[in-house]
Image (cartoon, rainbow, N blue to C red):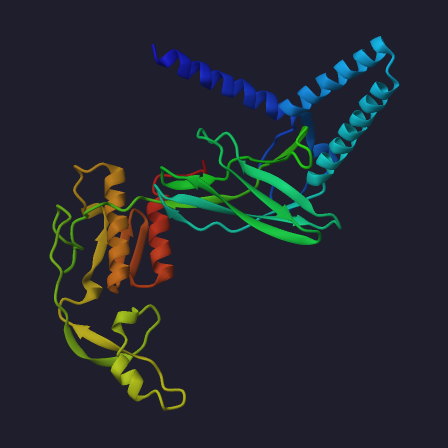
Length: 339
């Protein structure tokens, strides 16, 4: 019984998307800067605008029946105001320049933030421009902004994520009802933007598999390193490894190098995150989530780690670049094309 309305809603959305694609000339994602020329901006009356038009018709008919000169004057004056409002509403949106911004990767379950730049290169201020994603399957959340003359405004649109891999930015609708709200002008923009969604970290993941390969069940016990001395700072060392006392003593020396603590025994270099050693009883997404959790924990603890996942085999390292490479391999494992 409940499947019929759901299928009917999907069918309506399908035909609506087909109609909009043909009517509004919607095509492939647009790379680079986009200019809203006149043929890209559409305008229709709002509910208030339709009621206003009906009122004008009633006034005009009444003026004819009763031969009211003042009635004709009032009707034509209000009609002229509507025409001016139509021009101002259209001009408030047309001739904007749209530029896609940056987007940072995040984990599944978090909200992706797509950065967008709206440039107003004319000498007129723009007011109350609303923009938001469409056809996302959820309630469309819109944001409003004003753009002064010869200025650029930046806005970030959020989009929930539920799966790992590439996620393309949905179509964006820009609209305005300024100044009187009698008409609505809108335009569509499909920016060529995508974001990489990492797997969701596993909650209460087992300890890191220190000491080499680690047990088959994915659990392990952390080793205890022994302090072995001071060495020169190396790129990728954690801030926790810095020898702050020695650095403070050498602070007065010009050009004194940074130094870090060196440990031996149960070394961090023995930490290897190998996807093939995870229990096969776990499903694919759970194993990827566990690997993700281990990568984040190793980075937080400053433990250099090797990483192996299919053809990806990375030597022990530490730092943002190594972490990003590992998380990208986890996000794209078995994924080929952006959604």
